[in-house]
Image (cartoon, rainbow, N blue to C red):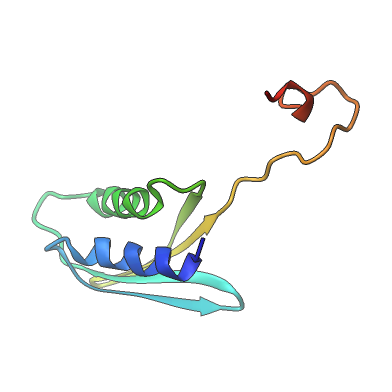
Length: 107
């Protein structure tokens, strides 16, 4: 699974929306940030986070990925979010504590 391809799909899905004029990714100290130029229609508060979730879910479809998006700041029509895609961690061995997600219970 190539994470760069997923990032490109994510940005393409974001740019498919009419309200988003520009979107880019910048990595600062290894943490990816998305910069979005968003011009909302009147009375559309909170729609941007829904657009980000929708674009991320379309990019992750069919893959074992999760995402996390955290709002950082806003200046006029520029919105900055900390966004990352990550693979969920699964147990690789039995620790002997009788965990409900133990690998011994997998078929």
